Amino acid sequence: MKGVLLVNLGSPDSPTPKDVKPYLDEFLMDERVIDVPNWLRNIIVRGIILRTRPKKSAEAYKKIWWEEGSPLVVISERFTDKVKEHTKMPVALGMRYGSMTIKNGLQELKDKGVDEVLLVPLYPQYAMSSFETVVVKTMEEKEQHFPEMKITTLQAFYKNEDYLKVLSNSIAKSLEGFNYDHILFSYHGIPERHIKKSDPTKFHCKIDGSCCATNSVAHNTCYRHQCYETTKRVTALLGIPEDKISVSFQSRLPNDPWLKPYTDFEFERFPKEGKKNLAVITPAFVADCLETLEEIAMEGKEQFTEAGGVEYKHIPCLNTDENWVAVMADWVNNWEKDGSLPS
Ligand SMILES: C=CC1=C(C)c2cc3[nH]c(cc4nc(cc5[nH]c(cc1n2)c(C)c5CCC(=O)O)C(CCC(=O)O)=C4C)c(C)c3C=C
Ligand SMILES: [Fe+2]
Ligand SMILES: [Fe+2]
Figure 1 (tube, rainbow, N blue to C red):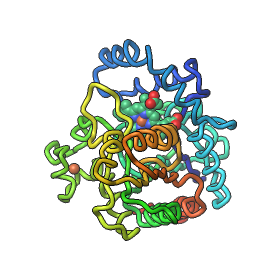
Figure 2 (cartoon, rainbow, N blue to C red; figure 1 turned 90 degrees about the horizontal axis):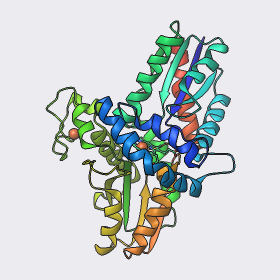
Figure 3 (tube, rainbow, N blue to C red; figure 1 turned 90 degrees about the vertical axis):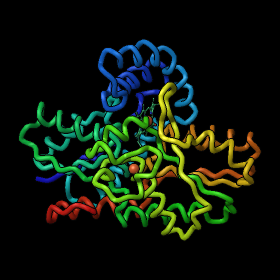
């Protein structure tokens, strides 16, 4: 029997340093996130980052935590429940990090008689530190615990027309009545090094963007290209002039060059250029989370208004949008019917 495993990033069990620390440990010790030799990762993560970050992150999580739990987890659970209503197949949810594991998700499907799984990493764009680590971890769990299972992966869907349509419609709805000067597409950042590492040609990706508009097989695994492509296609669907939009990258760790421009620097720059009414979209995420609710909706607003900005609007992620649920249901049901996958 066929079944579906949806996978997102995960959250700590509670917004306390005690629970944030092991979560960050698992996350940052992932070799696809902090991609340095193991001995060095140990020093950077356990010797430096984990000494101070859990307390700081726990404070941030406290600001956005819901009664039911982490917004990312709760929204992903609600989304999963809604997809279940639209399909006869068993659907399970797993998280790459934290206690809601991929292994448990696969077990839940196995207990329902599933032996053929469609793995859906809930990331519109490919990154080694998001999409790829989900696929690798799922394959490791399969080899170790579910060798009889067949797993097919749904690829990053940043240029799928149905996804782009629901995203654009949801943005258009949020923008109704908001008189903006500018729209910022803020994507989660990654270290520049990851772009080069993920380039199978080893020469195409140049970081400065001169590569991203030239056709190449490298784009299948180029996060930067896929972010700019998402932006270009959404902007075209919305009919917004290109000079009214720009792209930036948020949430970096210190001491490393990450993709630029940095979102927080843009918040300070825009008001000085007369862009005083700003809407911010976060299309690297399908569910609102710490990075959107705290860093963009709260901190971003403060940075922008302190720099002289007037009106600021964070546009929510797709979350449990009915049309988004319907698109996901179509994708999984088509796969069940004839094995076809969205393009
Ligand atoms: C688009 C998806 C994501 C990519 C790519 C990604 C890369 C990446 N992230 C970190 C470090 C942190 N990210 C944190 C939170 C976080 N990251 C994503 C998604 C991507 N990360 C999400 C959805 C979240 C929110 C989780 C939630 O519970 O709401 C955090 C934890 C919070 C903090 O301390 O700031 C860290 C740390 C790295 C290093 C990285 C690529 C190398
Ligand atoms: Fe992250
Ligand atoms: Fe590129």
